[in-house]
Length: 325
Ligand code: SF4
Image 1 (cartoon, protein in one colour):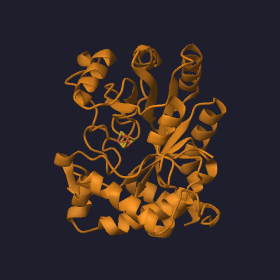
Image 2: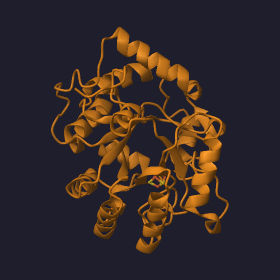
Image 3: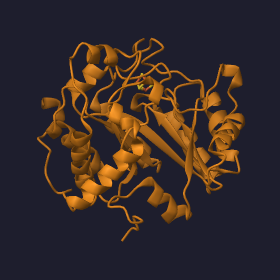
Image 4: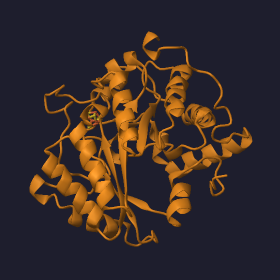
């Protein structure tokens, strides 16, 4: 039985303690890449919820491409952790924009810089499934062989399995593209973390649980369950201001999250159960700024409802093709 270190779900923290015997903190990086949904290949406006920083709000600030230096950003990130007792190892998290979308030689150089750092235990690469081409997978496979003591994870932004929502989000690819990328990464032995957003406009609880169940059935290495944040200067903020949708209350979110955890296969590592929107850019929901209260509320609710990850994983939410919904 896997040790969850006292929590009723398998957190990233517990995974790191089990495998590496201590906590490992993430340093979010900005590699000055772009995204096909922003550079014109697919679109110019990005996903409807995406901030100007390419969903990389917590990346170490960088002024220009010239300033990209993995060593320097990692050092800055370690200094920011500075006073806290955070241990000696870190995950280099390529967070901002699409981190497999660029010249292969550049991608190789940034991944290698991070992997070579003595305090980096591994790298986590956030990207889109339509930007995981074969040369990238070959590169990651080669790097895995060359740095056997380090890990390489890929984070795929899926957000939802429902095409109607994906169209509203301007996600820019159908579910089949995700399935294809996920299968190819899995075949190459590269652990995948899937991002889902809870509380998207137009989605009810059943639709959200269908997405969670669908992902759970594919048994990725990890999932991130992200509360929908409305950030300043996004088209989502305009729709929100026009009253086109409401954000979840804390109570509704926690109740939904508990159901998601109950559905998720117990072997899947839950990397996130809330959101990380930067306080100054966050329009709603305001309550999510108090992350500690959210986590305490979740743990309390899980205990009260006697929910452990996977306790309802056999519930069938699959109505056939999600595209038919
Ligand atoms: S794929 Fe990511 S970086 Fe690109 S627009 Fe969407 S959220 Fe932003």
